[in-house]
Amino acid sequence: MQKRRKVGNLLALAVLSALVQRPMHPYEIATALRAWGKDQDMEFKWGSFYTVIRNMDKHRLIEAVESVREGRRPERTVYRITDVGRAELVDWTRELVSTPMPEHPRFRAGLSVFAALHPDEAADLLRQRLDLLEDAIRQDREALDAHLREVPRLFLVESEYDLAMRNAEASWLRGLLAELTSGSYPGLDTWRAFHETGEMPAELVELAERTTTPKANAKTTDTASTPKANAENAGTDTTGVGTTDTETADTTGAETTGTDTTNPKATTPTASSRGAD
Figure 1 (cartoon, rainbow, N blue to C red):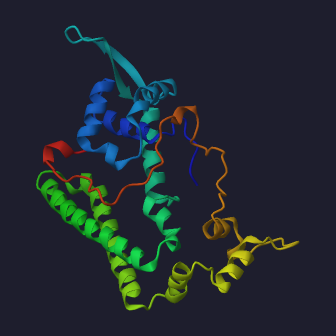
Figure 2 (figure 1 turned 135 degrees about the horizontal axis):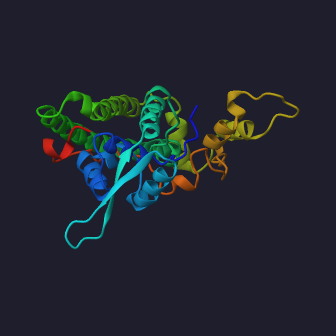
Figure 3 (figure 1 turned 90 degrees about the vertical axis):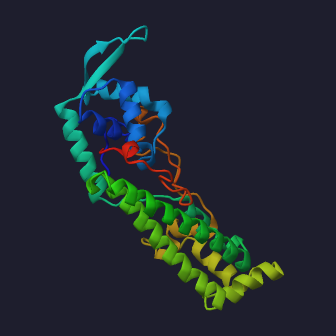
């Protein structure tokens, strides 16, 4: 179960990972995080950076140790991680590594309304995606190999994960395309007929009615009549408009967009730009 955190924006986790190495002022922290690619590892907005720093200081995850001035530049406050911050870094990392949580990549959103496309067009678009994905995999492999020559594998494990996930997706796409091309995909004729005649097949009309009509006096529902199934089959929004435990005033700026799998994490790598984070 996801914990409610005093500062739930993932940018706070990134800041802690930087300050665990040495005290820094905010500009140094931001520079280090960009150099290490942390904004590619986590979803956050740089616009909330200074708000997150203030909230972390407020909740004693970090603390000011001195103020420094370089030449005519404004005075800068140097922060260090506290014992509370170190404990938070470890606990948060444990949660993220050990506990699967729902994620919503853009590709999945497209697949959830896949039937809106004619099957021939769908196959063409999947081939296009596969071509882009295979190119990204090649670039990712080259980038990872380049980094491994100078950076310990421990600090590149997230890049290994990205590569493994892209390879898995590519394998799945090849299998799906093979079914669509050979005609063995279940329900392909019905799908094609809907687009060519403009008429919804009777079995799909019946399915839609059955999965969107509540069962009278039912204390429990089967899988087909759950809000999740209704949302996927009828387009109903069941998410509500409330906030999660971590969507507090301290989490302003957290992004919720998925990762575009056609854009490799690092296409022009240099070992020095990655760093041991």
